[in-house]
Length: 514
Image 1 (tube, rainbow, N blue to C red):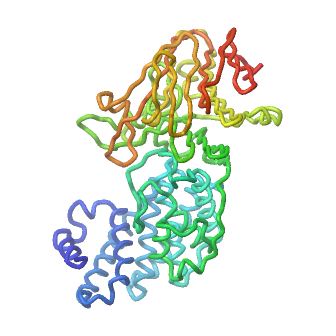
Image 2: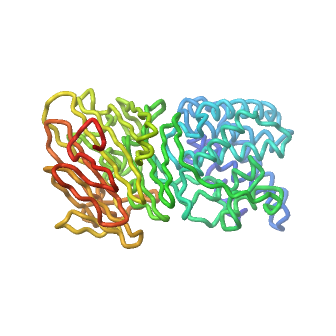
Image 3: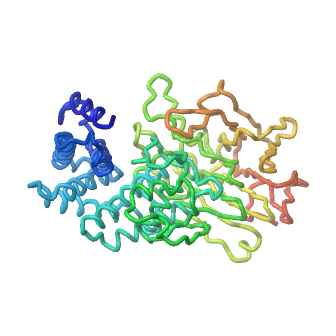
């Protein structure tokens, strides 16, 4: 079946003709699949010498297509350059007798290592501001390490350490119960050479493979996430010791990612001054996970190209994230499908030890609305006794009327009490409430309100969630207070919220509590 499919494809797609040769990255990824499958079916009766030669001719044609035009991929400063340079390296190591082999090996290796060092920060975060693209880039790095080992080449220690840092980063951002990560950043569904039966959103296969290849150990016990390592590693995975590694809170300051872990909860916060092309206008977005449930979630990407409905434009907007929108404007200016102008600048404030002891976990702010509207958005996150409090301050530098909208994207199992403006979540035994003086609220749900009430967990797919908008028209600095609690607690008296032993002013004040 494989050979019939390949022969049919080759017959309809001669080299450098047609859409399937247009993108160098597609040629590289196709080549990697062919190089992987060749030894898997080498002894099959259908694998004649003629067919094997035909496969390797496609590999040669792919490398020949990539080499002269790789400059464009490199200029993108993303996974395209990684894929194409790795494609050259794999072609060279797989065909040592080809006259271009030595050139492909040298050029591919040099370019690949340069990009790994440029695209991955020391803290493990990735230049594309996307969890899914980071997985793709990490897998390319793991392939490079595997091919180096089998072909007698030695990757630099600096490259291997960047790949290890990337694996640790993804592990610390992972929900322990499901293996899922926040659905953060541009996501086209890419999952290169997916060789496990795990759900596409499960990152345990790539992490198990990464720790086996890079650190020679397993971090998860036996499960379907072992399959990729079984396919790709020479040794039995039972030969690698099991050293379970706990996920930790993380401050990835190079990339602007912050994860706060408390018992079975994970709060994921984005606060970054962009240095590479942003994917979404989402600064100070916050995800909250509890016992494997994504209570406060990211709405995803949906589709890049959707000319009929143009829903993709909404999904990368500020309104599609759990953050504050001023005057219905995005934090940045959208210049095209993949381009933003006026990149956001942000900063994280240090926390005093006494404030940490009171439960303060994070304070950050961004200036996206400062130049246009004279408004800074500051978000403070607290955790005490199983409860979370998120304080959003819109700090006005000049007196002027503005519309503020705090948007929360909620798991669809939240139940809403309209009279009390209160949500409850039976599965996680959680309660959700937003305190905001003189505000109005709007709940969007069901397909009738797509795309605003939708979440895209898989590319091109959309499913309903609940979207809660709290709106206020203000002429001075203003405060929203959001609570996620284990019981129906929180009492407001004389402009002060009593929460877990702290008294929080409901109007903007320089201090968080009194």
